[in-house]
Image (cartoon, rainbow, N blue to C red; front, side):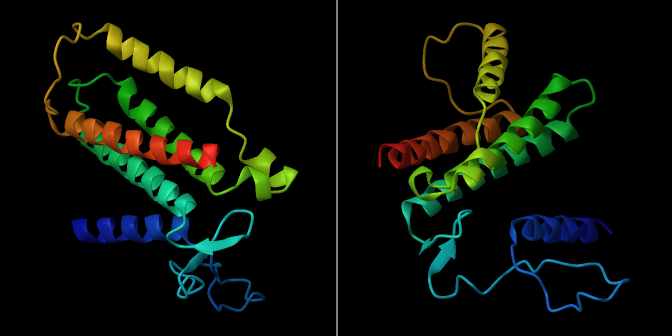
Length: 186
């Protein structure tokens, strides 16, 4: 049933972001450890960063994390639409590249959740973001841009579902960049 797959995907997505464990017996050899999709640790209006520092849920760090997550979802929706159309209609490397971008966005989120001035050297090393990732993304952008006619006017976001969600991702990315820049500037 299609909805079962969707429900499984939702459960996996929620479990991926969860950090709390259930009350299962740690000594039970046949029982797989499961993470809850909620922790109840944020019910008081605060949440925890990677360095274990608690901050208000409306802190600028969580705003930037939310934007990064939203960007990742928009790229994911575009990737799903691209997969539906992949029967020769699109560049076959697009799906691989979008998957790579999503993976790097998870790394960006980890870095945002690790304040430079309040995190240990070990935590900072773990979330270090290599310039090579940026260089690769810029090379991909240049490659796609070279295949387009020169822009002379603003364009309407259109071109199919994949393209529209990539336009959405572009606008969310700009917001995430503004919030991230504000964090870096302090």
